[in-house]
Image (cartoon, rainbow, N blue to C red; front, side, top):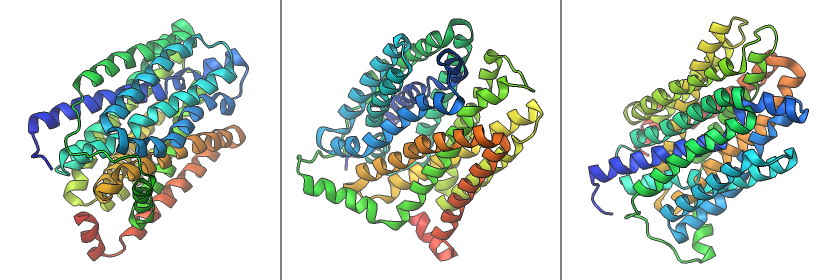
Amino acid sequence: MNPVDPARIRKIRIALLLGALAMFALLYAPQPVLPQLADVFALDPGTAALLVSASTLGLAVAAIPLGTLSEVVGRRRTMIVALLIAEVLGLLLPWVPFFPVLVAVRLVQGAAIAGLAAVAVAYLADETGGQHLGTTMGLYVAGTTIGGMSGRLLGGVVGDFAGWHGGMLAVALLAGVCTVLFVVLLPAERNHHRQPLRWRPLLGGLRAALSDPVLYVPYLVAALGMGAFVTVYNVLGFRLTAAPLLVPPALAALAFLSYAAGTVTSTFAGRAADRWGRTQALFTSLAVTAVGLLLMLASNLLVIVVGLVVFTGGFFAAHSVASGWVGARASASARGQASALYQFAYYGGSSAGGVVGGAAYGAWGWSGMTVLLCCWLAVAAFAVRLAVPTRKRVAVAQAS
């Protein structure tokens, strides 16, 4: 293990923050223009949401293979090639005239994005030497929140004036700038030793990541929490622009400024996990997420926005703690595979949860959907509490 260079760590943090920004901007580029896409292609909300679910499905399926491949070809190379492919596809998407083809391209784009999403946590854990990993992971997650907010806001505002084509193109151009900076700034790994392409040790790492029961807690939090989160943001535009609220699309896009709450809370939650323990920080974050969800039941626009801010902040705090837990808990030989499994759960939950949650909204409205999402969050919180039922095991979890 090479000594930790503070200047190099800062460079890594900046590069991965930019990479995360580009990744999330591309991944959710269609989300702010889903109502427009539904009108153009004559779709219901659940079908339009396939443009989001397709990309997260591609990411979930490709996460484990690409995470494992990074052990062979190198983490930096995997992340750079993956993000470049995703950016090229992002620039092509606005010119696709048929909805089924759009869904297919989004599926491939999501698979490409997996090369960054599934490898970044392992790269961070390797190159920081485990020092202040919670804080570093919090900054990385903050990059995802900035990307999610800026991409959705830009796409929604531009899309209101230039159509869904213009909205998605604007997001792709923003991501392109971040991608170039990411490629230039990201240092080559020093502490990761590439493995030869032998399946037995690679599968052994995957087996180790699957055999640790403690890791199933952050995996479950990722799946259920992200399912709830993507459902809310998929259908939010439909609720805000419909009666009785009737918010103009450009103003409805301003709701995505709520992502700023995630930028703050993800960093704070990482520090809280380092100081007070991961389980306590994670349980509290899930509780805050549920409170925000319940606030959004109100019919008052201001209360809905406040609830969205609370919901977003709580979710990203939980994601920051859960993903950092995986990086700290997994052994060095299984870190890449454990990170990939977390991403599989996270984006698999996004894909499946987005479809199920969208269908719930279509069938039961916002209130029925809220009941379903609260049940998901309750199951995740229960799993966290089961993981450490005694103070003694809290101390063990903190030490791990």
